[in-house]
Every structure is written in C-alpha cells, then in structure tokens.
Amino acid sequence: MSDQTLTCKACGSTSFAVGELGHGYANIRPVNKRMTTGSPLLLTYCQDCGEVASMKVKEIGKLKN
Image 1 (tube, one colour):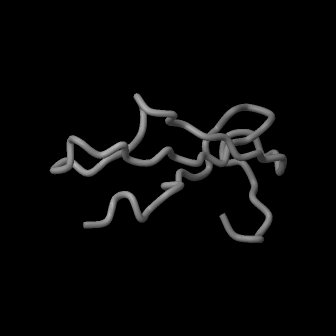
Image 2 (cartoon, one colour):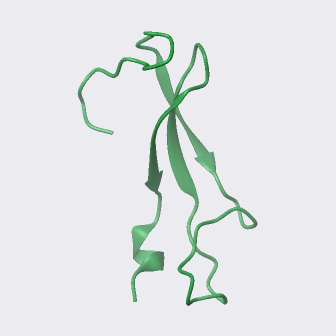
C-alpha cells in the first residue's frame, strides 16, 4: 500500500504487516492461461486481529498477455 498510515476497520489498530499467499498451488493466474505459473498475492494484514487491508499481485507481468 502507500505510505499513509493504515487503521484496521475491524479493531482500530495501526500495526500492519505484509504476508505472501501463493507459492505454486495458490497463485493467481489468468482464466485463459492454464499453463502459466501465475503470481503470488501480497496481503497487508492487521497484526492484532488478522483483518486483511489489501491484496496485491506480486508479479503483475506474469498475468499480462
């Protein structure tokens, strides 16, 4: 996300971290490209309650035509 301070919508905390979802089986890929490895997702989440504030494709170039 940007340099702005985030506030959790669920618990009001301002303590966030970034985690990665993917590593092969859970990667996101285009519907019409079944043979691509796709890209993991980066999730920004609240460190106090686990609420996910944002999801971003890590390697967007792998999803472009």
